[in-house]
Length: 165
Image 1 (tube, rainbow, N blue to C red):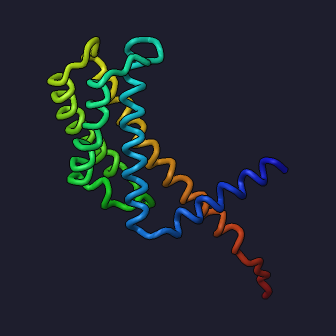
Image 2 (spheres, helix red, strand yellow):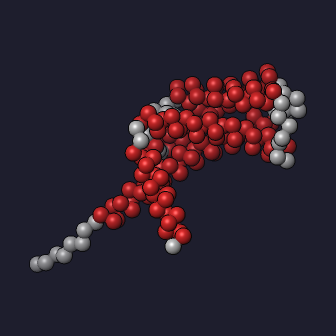
Image 3 (tube, rainbow, N blue to C red):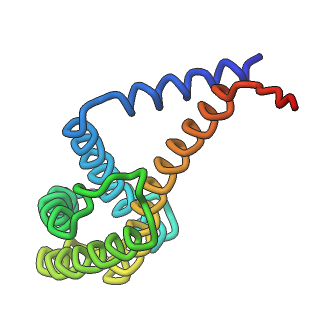
């Protein structure tokens, strides 16, 4: 009973997300990317230090504010916001790989210029892998949910046919 209720809520959420306009979907993807990039930065620092990082100062906040300012134009130039998620393919993964590589290169140089105290340089490489994995996975998850919903609808709308003759 609980699982069925949970599935219905997820289904309604997916249907409502699919029904919003294309511009709103792009804005949603941009917001999700900003959250992913900031979260991956925090996770990369924590992974490098081996503890949950809590010693934020102004330099770290500057780096976190610079993240979307660098990433969004680069991601847009690589076409990450112009493609449709339901057509996500290996070509999309390659585009994301090159966009994240270019972004991390520019952001890494900027982070080294700002150089907060006790900023490990290996965070740049760790952030590359975490950001790449999360950006690809969130788009893949969206495609899988869309495909699951469409498959369920096809199964539920099939008519029983009797062949006589």
